[in-house]
Length: 93
Image 1: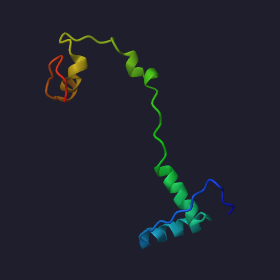
Image 2 (image 1 turned 180 degrees about the vertical axis):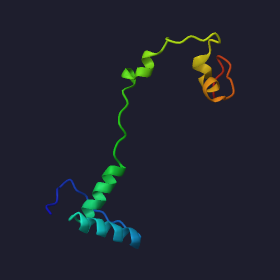
Image 3 (image 1 turned 90 degrees about the vertical axis):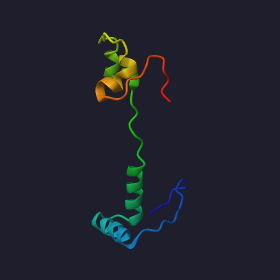
């Protein structure tokens, strides 16, 4: 296998059982153990998808609902989940 200049060699210790499983998967897929490990680490470290909050449909509903209590934005956890009701202007801390 041709090594890229951007690759960095490292040494990792695995428990025997895990090492056997890596080797077995490598043989089954006709790949090196290093390739299996790189693929697994890449999947593990994959970035979470970026959420486009500006185009999130929930924000299009802003102002759509009314409350006679007038404190839905402050006490939504109270109304949805039964949390302690907060006073308007009271900081959460």
